[in-house]
Length: 79
Image (cartoon, rainbow, N blue to C red):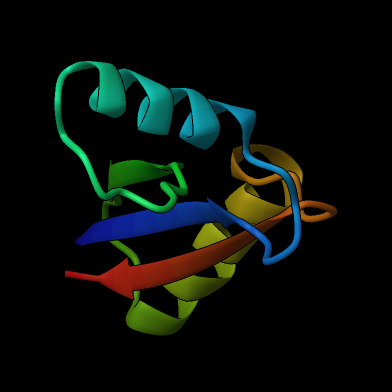
């Protein structure tokens, strides 16, 4: 089973990397960009799990390693 976990900063958390990207795009003449929010995507392949087991395991992975839940949100998609 394949899954995709998307991790993004929570609303209101400063995103210095996103701000740097806006500056870099502006210097490359991509004008009119107000803001950029960056994140992470993890594509994970799981073996021999039911859908419920996979969701539980993926949630545990996010809570323990993949996301800093103080400042980040995560979304799990089974593909």
